[in-house]
Amino acid sequence: MPTIPSPGLGTSGNDDPDQCAETLRTALDVGYRHVDTAQMYDNEAAVGEGIAASDVPREEVLLATKVHPSNLAPEDVRETTDESLDRLGVDAVDLLYVHWPTGAYDAEATLPAFDEARDAGKTRHVGVSNFTVDLLEAAEDILDAPIVANQVEMHPLLPQDDLLDYCRDRDITVVAYAPLMQGEAGEVDVLADLADEYDATPEAVSLAWLAQREGVVPIPKATGEAHLRANLAPPELTDDEVARIDAIDERERLIDPDAAAWNQ
Image (cartoon, rainbow, N blue to C red; front, side, top):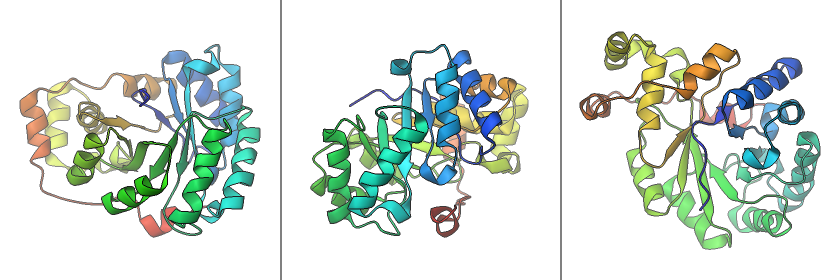
């Protein structure tokens, strides 16, 4: 299985072309080596422009994109993967995801098209996103390619322990989106208290907790250079501090799956 650089740079919502391209260039220049985009985000061209503008060689960057739920019929996977590569300005991506197991997704029909993309050299690896354990098991039975990553919402209020255990056993990296909790981190007392102790933000503590979980790669979003650099160097938590976060019993999903799956 490939090593997926941590943290990655999430680009969801960064759809201003100039800002997105500049963010990508800056992110690579300050040390990021994993970039995550999607057909759904409407920014693949800007992401590709930013990568091309950086002095970092393409082969040093793990570039991932995701196929929109409405494009998961086999012929649409083939056509829109080519379109994504064209927008990104690359011959291949390093990781091609099924974005959501909904819409046109049919495991028996969809997943062989991802194998085809890998065999044709259009992606080096195959991943899935927003898959449960049951969906992962079904996908593994169909795919020839190993599933190298499952991208899901994960943070201290949604630790997804059972899913993480399954993925660890299968050597599947969990790529964690919404790691900064969309502004909610400061409302969690443990995170706020630890942030005070470290003279950091609650979001940084959430990111630190994820970064220290075995088998997890967070993909925080950021634009300005200061935030990009901060996300590369979250606090180093002690075992006791990790345990305090693990003990949080509140649970909340911050991303509405129905709304997110059809976000245009």
